[in-house]
Image (cartoon, rainbow, N blue to C red; front, side, top):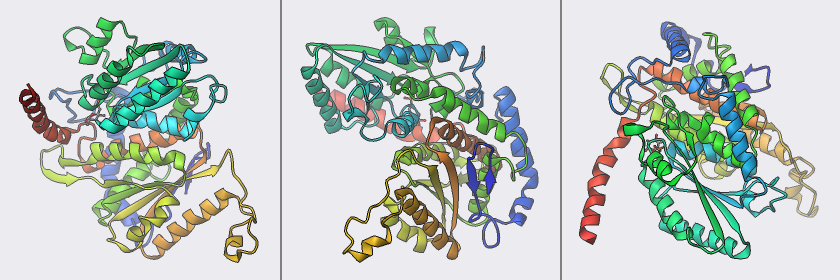
Length: 480
Ligand SMILES: O=P(O)(O)OC[C@H]1O[C@H](O)[C@H](O)[C@@H](O)[C@@H]1O
C-alpha cells in the first residue's frame, strides 16, 4: 500500500507479488522506467514530448502538468482564477439554469465535477439549497433528438413558471466546430432564443487563438459579443478538466476549484521522484503496463464504489482509450497498443459484470475506487425483525456494507489469480478528486513512455470523420 500524507492511498497488493506482476517483471524494465521518468520530467519542465505532433503534423507542447500551479504567466494565473470566481459569483442568485454543451474532453471532466459536487438531485433542489447557484444541464454529448427535445421542453416549462427566466448556455469546444456540440447548441439556441420572458446569454470556451487561426466558435463569440474562456494551447481535451474547461463548470456550481487544483498539485509533488515504490502515478503505470505486456491483462475495469464517481470511470475511458490505444509506436511500427477501458460501479455491477470478471478470460485488471469517510452514512435499521435474512445487514452503516462488498469482491478475484487494485479516497471532496484525476492523467503520460506510443494524439478518431463528412454533405444535397 502506498499512502500519501493526505491520506490518499494506492493498494496494489492484488496486482503485485507471486502470480501477479513480480519484482522480476519490474527489474526487467528498470532502464525503461528510469527513461520514462526522465521523459516525464522533461515534459514537466519544458512541455516537450519526444515525437508528439499536433493534428496538423507540427511539434506541439504538452502542458497539462503546469495546470495545477497557479502563478503569473502560467496557464492558470491568479488573474484567470479571479475571473472564474467572479464569473461564478455573477451567476449566483441571478441565473436560473446553465446548459453546458460539450463532448469528449469538453464534457467528461465537467460531468465528474458536477456529479461529485452536486449529486443526482441538484436540479430539483431550491435555489437556497443550491447556495444560489443555478441548475445545470448537459447537452451536446450526443446528437440525440429526443433528449434534446426533452431538454428544450423542460426549460420552456420552467420559463413559463418564472419571469424573467435567466438561462446561460456554456458552449465548450477546443476545436470550435465539433458537430455534436455545435449541432445541439444550434437546435437549443434557436428553440429558446425567442421564448417570452426567457433571457438567454452565451459563454464560449474554445481555443483562444485569434485572426486566421480563430476557431469557428471563437469567431461566433467575437461576432456576437459572447464572453470567452480558453482551452489553452498544449492542453488536450482529456487533460482539460484542470483548465478553464473544467473550472468554468466548477465556478457555475460553487465547487472549490482552489482545493481541486491543490489536490492535483499535491499529487504532482508526490510524483517527482523516479522510484515507483513511492511515486503513485509511476507505480500505477508500471504495474498496469506490465500486467498487460507480461501477463495479458489487456482490459481495465474502472470500478468506483460510489454512484457520484461513476463519471470518473467515464472520464477515464476517454483518457485511457485516446491516450494509449495506438496502432503504431513512435518508430512507426505497428503495435496495436492499449488496454480497453470498461466502466463499472460497485456494488451495482457486482450484479451484472462480476460474473465475467471472476470466470471470464484472465485478461482484466479491476481498478476499484473506495471512499473512506462519507458525508452521510445511514445505519441500516432492523426494520423487519421477522425477516431473519435481512437482519444480517441491520445495524451496520451503509458504508460498512459497501466496504465489505468491495473487499469480498477483491478477495474472490485474488483467490482465483485475478488482478485488482484500490485507490482509497479519504473523503469525496474537491482536493481528493484533484489528486485522483491528476494521478490518472500523469499515469498515462508515464505509460505512453513505457510503451513508446504518443499518449497525446488521437489520429484514429479521424477515420470515421473522413467518412461522415461526405455523408452529411450527400444528405444535405439530397434534401435540397
Ligand atoms: O473540444 P472539442 O474540440 O469539441 O473536441 C471534443 C472531442 O472530440 C474529438 O472526437 C476528440 O477525439 C476528443 O479528444 C475531443 O475531446
